[in-house]
Image (cartoon, rainbow, N blue to C red; front, top):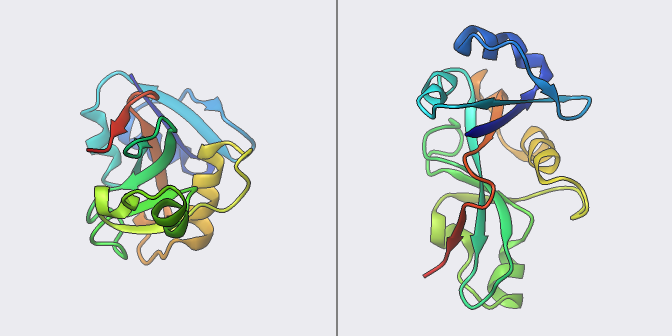
Length: 156
């Protein structure tokens, strides 16, 4: 099962690509849907920048860190990919004393805006809309998906 979130302004785009018109309200600005097949993500990739919600567990810790990974060449301004994370490079490298997330997963890093107490999905959209460079129409349309919420990655 794949859960996904997008701005309500783009319901027509999702409908045209998938033929799905029933979505739940996540909040006033976001809609939430689900897919049974991951092959349908390829259809969404034509019109949206796809960002996958992931979990990172740094070496020698049990703490889970949510982050959003946008793969290479999905946003025209970040050809090496992009990571949106609630933790700054300094926090990870010096306070946690572990390898920074960009060295583990590749790409540029932008720290999420908002408070830690706010939902991750809302913070990711807020950050993408306000801090991420966008050039094309596709760059302006973010769709976040999560294949499995507990899909944690243990750093080696």
